[in-house]
Image (cartoon, rainbow, N blue to C red; front, side, top):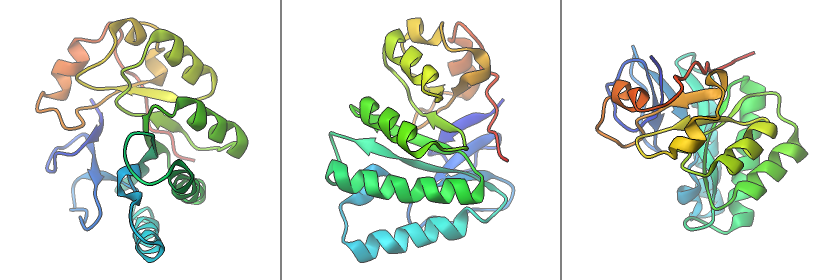
Length: 193
C-alpha cells in the first residue's frame, strides 16, 4: 500500500516529502518541491531552491515534484506562487514525473493553470477535504485526488479508485487505518512516462 505523501522520514511504501535542506536516503522514495509557504524569500533563494529541486528530481528514488502549489492563506503573493509553480511544472514535464499539489482556497486558479499549461504528467491534489462537487470538478479537469486522515466521506465515495490515493501527511495514524475508513479503496498509481 502506497502512502502518497508523508512528512515522516523512515517510512517504507511512502512518498516522503523532502523539505529544503533535507537529503534523500537509500531505500526510500521521495518527492521534492518548493512549497507555496516557502515562497516568501528573495529571488536568489527561490532560484537556489528550484535548482536543488531540479537536481533531486534526476534521482530515480525521487518519484514526484512537490509538495508544490497555491495557497491563498499563506506564502508569497498569488502571482509569485503561480510563477514558482509554473517553474516546477516545467521540471515535472522534463523529468516526466507527477506533481503532488498543495492547494488552499485556490482551486479555480489551479484548474485554470492546468487548462492553460496542458501538462502531460499526472497532477495529484493532496490532502483533499472538499465537497463532492469540487471533487467532481477536479476529476473532470484531469486531477487525481489523495485523501488523508481528515476527509469528506461523501467526496471519498465518488472518486474512482483508479484516481484515488491515500496519505498520512503529518498524521501519526498508519496509512492502513486511513484507508480502512474510506468507502472506496485507492488503486491510484503514480504514473511516469
